[in-house]
Image (cartoon, rainbow, N blue to C red; front, side):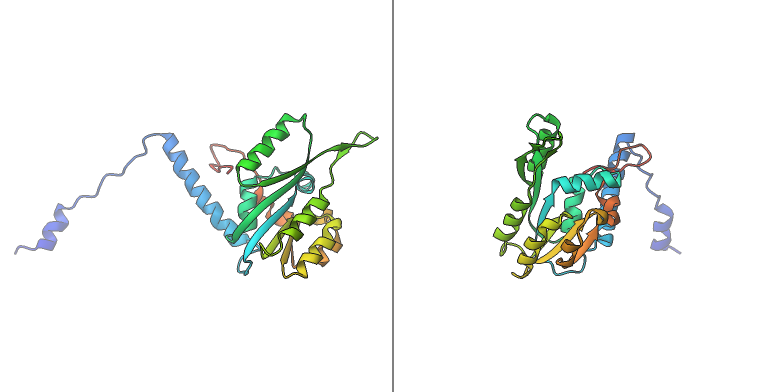
Length: 223
């Protein structure tokens, strides 16, 4: 007896497996997978999830972050950092404050990269002190920008542990802004944490914001 189902079953043949043309294709596909998995992990671990943060403005004390990264033994990937701090919220703009040495070509190249990748860079020339050390204090610039932009954002993410910024943080809080502090605990003033709505230790998120060297065994991209 003729059975169309039986006939179709016998006539069907599995399609041959499609082989990758070359190793580069495999690497590119794995890199895409790694990026998707990394984004999912960042969304799961982000301390900012499930919060009504509204529009977010990010203020980064470059010098403070640099020394925190040295303490942690990592190099910051600034695209990962931005994605982690934003955590899916609407971003007003990330501001990056730093002292600059006009003779340092490597630093100038880095700051140019930052500008071309979404950061608003606020720079001040480094001052040299009698002991030979160099420093640029940008507390005033950070404070003024936080105050001036109040009304344009709902949540401020301040990447700094400098206690001199506590007054500005308290001031914008009185104007209805939520303030989140992100810094290394050992380099953070208690006075700053006490006036913030939330605090995040860089130690807790370092694996998600550091650069990852490329290797054949680990196909992770530095975005």
